[in-house]
Amino acid sequence: MKSKKTSTLMACVLVLSGLIILPGAAGADVDVSNCIIAKIGADPRFEGPPVQLDDTSDANWTGNRQFYLSQELGNQGLAVLLTAYAMGETVWVRIAGDGESGSLVTVIFVNKK
Image 1 (cartoon, rainbow, N blue to C red):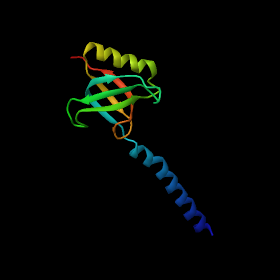
Image 2: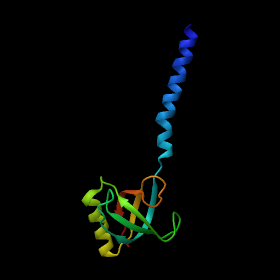
Image 3: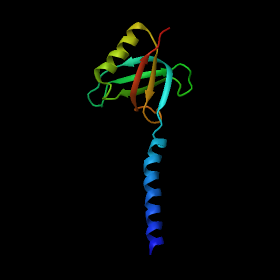
Image 4: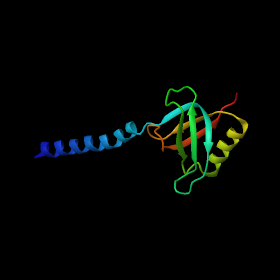
């Protein structure tokens, strides 16, 4: 009887460990070190303001790709993008998930020339 309880407990621990470890591995974000801001806008239909970015290295995508600012970035994120855009500077961004169009921008830094 004791070995059946031990086996059941061990199986539960393994399943729970998998549930904790696997989501972190699947949720890798994309960091892009040098993006040109092509367009910034506002559209109330979406979670955050849309921004079109061009990865200058073409390592992650070619041409412009549209993303949305995460709600956590809020007005501060929009201010950073508008400042970089007005100054003609590129930005470093972290994009949630796999970096596909429509993903959320979660971190922004302005690059200095």
